[in-house]
Length: 504
Ligand code: F6P
Image 1 (cartoon, helix red, strand yellow):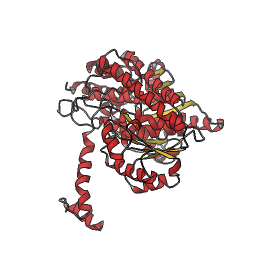
Image 2: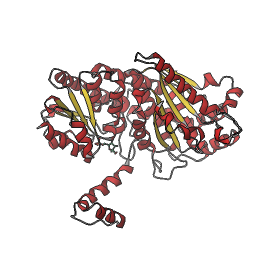
Image 3: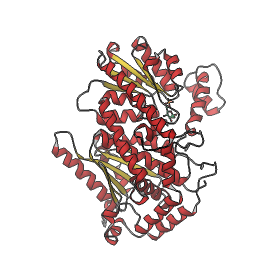
């Protein structure tokens, strides 16, 4: 289905109507706004009251969602329809964490995933009974960012049973620095790659295998288990499958989450899945107007297509979520960085903005100047936790007061006769509060973002589950390896000059 331009034009006419109405005015004009623009789902509360649409514009957003048949799109996703049309695949990450669809493909996926989780549990128990103290997880992109985020967010202040280290970059210094402090006799490794054809993972895997002195303590996770086993001579019992119906950036819930389960324990890994399943059930069942993922996704559409904003910040007010922006960059930008619709025709409206961010309060002292007074407006998600788990209550109060202050200052601004000291305000934000940072709340938060991405993809008419844009660079790099080694020349004159400068 081609997404028509008229829905976006309607949004733009609402934006024009509202161009002189600031956020403070919207709050005055709409006494119900605070309640109407907030939702609580399980451990997550989110308020959209500081977005720059009013009730009428919100109705237009909902109408666009209805036109695009968001409920039907969710049903097709959960049922295992081939929503990844360019690759002819389902995207059944929801079946990794819950039995929410009666469709045979989804039931089968759910059962298969549950079996693999039990195998994973067995492997973890065997490792727990061994001398191993450290795990090196080798993978990149979706085979790294999710596990890295969750393991970091949910680990305690002291190491658990295993210390888990992540190795992704092909730069040899990454391998050197990761391995230097470790003892090969007390280290095991997990190689994670959906394809097992990824240059970084194959090269780093070879380094780790040689450093370990063999493959007895190497485990693998792959949708191509034979290739994984053959490449590193890994016994079949230590190779866990994943499937082509799980996209890399949606895969932390599968055996790709092996390092998570090692870092935080298998039971807490299952709680993470339960938190995601809670959000899945909400997204599938809640009507559009009270559906949190729909609300979040439509707010993003408003900022991109009605207000024309080209970047989006995610600001975490919980240090344990410091890796969330990096994880979301792949989830959002690899999914939504598309310029053609499902049928190959050009999109009717701009798609993904640049997603970036960091952890407050640190980033208040780096890029917040630009958020408050720069010429470009950057809508932001502020993510915080109500309760902390550290003993420093005064710091938590200070952290929360900063979160509240920044969202308020960005929205309300402050007038001054001195233009250097004036704050324009009207900079939109969404605030998301987790009751506490637990496996459940984090699972729910990540599932919310996955579904928000899907909402945006459906509104824009694009495929959220392929990533052909990353292939060209890989192909060119492969052709330039022999040129770098002096075996061939480089056709591009700038590259040829750079290779000369590199001394090859
Ligand atoms: O960056 C491109 C990409 O294909 C991602 O989509 C994927 O998560 C990553 O590479 C790693 O791929 P694999 O798991 O196959 O090694």
